[in-house]
Image (cartoon, rainbow, N blue to C red):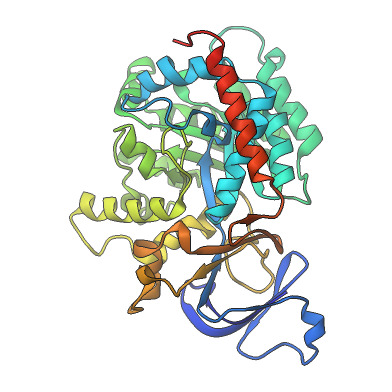
Length: 435
């Protein structure tokens, strides 16, 4: 497939116009002003790129896809009330059918919004795998571990499910699916569980995904429980960060925590919209970046966001950083776009993704520039980050295959998916009073 005469955001996050981009199989084979060959038939489909912009696909580096089933269900609540009074009771009634269709709906929303890959932490993972593979999207999937009892770690149901996932699905979908380990959080696990999972991840060669210091309450209670140790210090002592790790939120991290995160090469995922909605606080992304930590962007779940728009996350994160530091120069459009693309890919261990670059995976999003909110073009990257919306996305490609194009989902029956989600939610709510 050839994108002819198109603008691109190149590997250095500079805009180039009048470029030809050739995709062969699952990779970007050529980028240049001249055509790579006179044999046009060898290009396959040719897409006219006039008035279009090609960018790397977005990476949602922290999500809980099935929680779309709870979109709008727990509103105007603190995190603890939201979790224990609305979300956990609803989740107790989830079924395999509901999780499959909920995940598929999130994959549809993701593709429509230019997300090519998601780092998901949840359970009912077999059903999530089916939906992810059916959609054609990429995913780093982890079976979240929450264990407070004293039962043997290896006999814990969630641990058995994690091992089975690795055995059956690691690298499935031609490498689109990566299975990770996940400690839900310090406050949902005892020390034996944290230490045991850290060792299991190291033994099995798995990456780690964990919630860290999302709220002040969580952060302070951890220090009270563990002799003044913060969640970052405690988790590090347990060995959680001894494998490539992704720490979600990090709103309340302290200077010592930042030193540990840097030393352990931990990727931090900021989730600005979710953190604002739950009044959890504002992650200091500039301070993290100034200390050499790679920061990626996530939406968190549709239950706490309430959508999967990376455009919203980029703009919100950028503006929050400027206000937090009282400095309008903080977070450039280049930095914001990198956080939404290549930084997320690196956090997932996908080192050949996240850039419009020859040899990289063809995970691409085509943006329509001929819209009122994208004109005039004094600074196209600023337009993209601060004026762009999901409505400008015309096409999402994953590994060289178009999965969404101008309102059409190529792999998902969206009408059936919407109907099944509605049925699933009604079934859950009709089974008596949840609260």
